[in-house]
Amino acid sequence: MIDKNNIPASIAIIMDGNGRWATNRMLPRVVGHNAGMKSMKKIIEAADDIGVKHLTVYAFSTENWKRSDTEVNGIFKLLVKYIDSDIQELSEKNVKVTIIGDRSRLSDKVNAKIDYALEKTEANTGMQFNIALNYGSRNEILRAVKTLGEEIASGKLSYENIDEDMISSKLYTGEFNIPDPDLVIRTSGEIRLSNFLMWQLAYSEMIFVDDLWPDFTPEKFYETIEEYQNRNRRFGGR
Ligand code: FPP
Image (cartoon, rainbow, N blue to C red; front, side, top):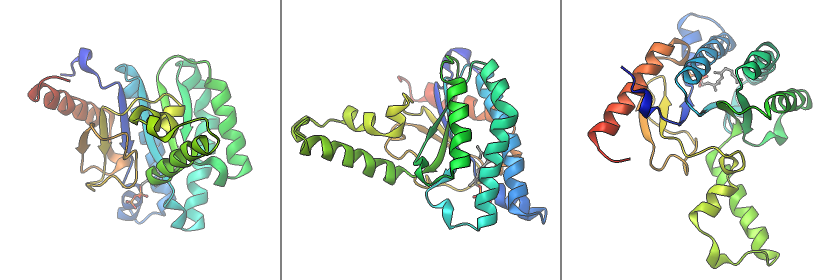
């Protein structure tokens, strides 16, 4: 049973395994991403239902550009489709959407659609759903370092005054008020972080599950929350 008084406020998910899910069925990889999007929708609802405050998903990494044009375009088409089909319902559920990552490499069409989603949900006060797009943790840290460097060069900041909170505030997660995740989940049996929120995950519980992302159901999601709660209970204070 999930303890409603100990729901992780901030959860991050590495939605891995869409490609293998499709290949196992001799289908194109994009079909796997489409199945992954359906899975993502169910998990958003499941997270919202139990009172998660921040759900951050890794949808496209800075390394994912190396994939075929068909696959890359397919993922962004799915994002546009997702916003078209779901933004109204998300907004009615008081969900606020944010994007973390470098949007400058995204097409004008995709950026316009993202702007629409952000504006539409800007004032919402319920769960914050954060989509990592063209996101890489090293790139995010580099960007923060450059911002601090600029502030030093302009005399606004003295290097001695840089502290951890200041670095956190210059990360995308700081800009969008996303607290460090209490829990990170990765599907598909791979045990690595793949350049996702490396600064922010310093103290997070990590749960790796074998299911491929399209097979990851709300029931399985709730099992990972129970596992998180058991770990917390076993190790005492938070
Ligand atoms: C990783 O699986 C998944 C991705 C790189 C894309 C994630 C996209 C979605 C879940 C659907 C679209 C949602 C949005 C918001 C655009 P993989 O392809 O690396 O799987 P593999 O390791 O089996 O090849």
